[in-house]
Image (cartoon, rainbow, N blue to C red):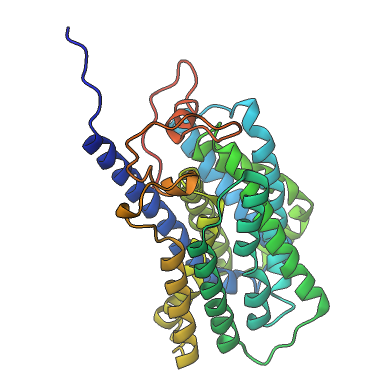
Length: 357
């Protein structure tokens, strides 16, 4: 049998483009579902405390992810992935959800937008220091524009509620936990698949929130069905599905760029509140939403192909940027996603299908 011919540059470019589209689609699913979560949180938060709501959401998400994992015969993550999974589970799935729910009960929307949306900026800084991610000028410029838009949206949608020192501190803690959890999760995705990382991170977050189990049981007995259904929906869609598509996209780009993508959430919240709740946005709110989307577009833009090859992982933010020359491996670099996905199925397991997104 004649040896197979090597892949042509055109084939490599086409594969990189398809990979980029899949990653972009996964990121889009995440952003839309996280934006939709605000409507459900508003309803469920009236009947459930911050800790009980976080635990109920995580338990629902863990059940869904566990069933999917059993059907697809997903095994345990390799030992090298556990540190990142554990840290992201404690910080992001556990601590972040509780303190964010609590903090947003203490501050008005404008203050929450100002403090919590520091998170993507912290992700870029931590990703640069801890992971060695590049921080190109376009990413910085886009994040600054989006942050200004997020604050504008928050201030324009604020009521007359006040802000407490405790509330500001909780929102800041939520932003720090979010950023640290994302940066911790990134290396784990070099050793395990997106579904594995999300499933076990969600389980660890649920364990962290178990002290609120008694409160969840008591409040569930008195809560209206609509609030409980909203809590379950939070676990199924913005948690189980959205966190998996997030991990899928994060494995194929830098932490900073993925963090910048979440700045589209405030703009989508404005549109969803308009469509679902009849909350007509003012001119300032619309302007803020446009700024958010413009900043995301700037942060995710790339240099033109004629500008020469871009070094570093940011060149392959959603694919390999059509590189025709194989780069030598860099010490400490995260293994490529196909290798990570191949490890997700152990010996004797069924072949994996494609992840969500």
